[in-house]
Image 1 (cartoon, one colour):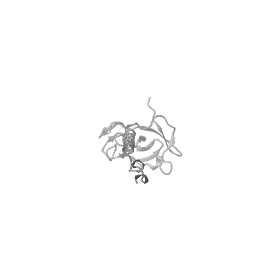
Image 2 (cartoon, one colour; image 1 turned 90 degrees about the horizontal axis):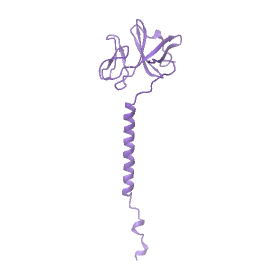
Image 3 (cartoon, helix red, strand yellow; image 1 turned 180 degrees about the horizontal axis):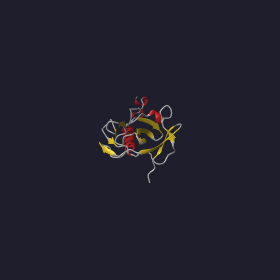
Length: 158
């Protein structure tokens, strides 16, 4: 007799089309959101503006004596990576992150230019673009030599 068997509607036959479509939709939305977030993070300008002053250095404060004639050093600070170059007239400070794709720039004493090793962007010591793919200048920072090291602060415009 057929009354002893379960009806066809009570037998689980796997995920429904509606469930599969919902899961695919969630995956698509997650992928698009992740991609859009990455693109926006790349295109969005970095935080700027006035910040407090602080000492720059890796393991400890960077001292002016640590930089030889026509030498340079890249230190980390709350402003990001800072390139400090010693010139005859004193120290010059620039943000050390290339404005093209974010590589760390370096001072080339032979050419007298700040250069990006990744794609060849070149800047002068005022941060102005001399060549290459960069479209924005490097930001200048204010440096003050003191007993504890080199104090870095944003260079306010205006």
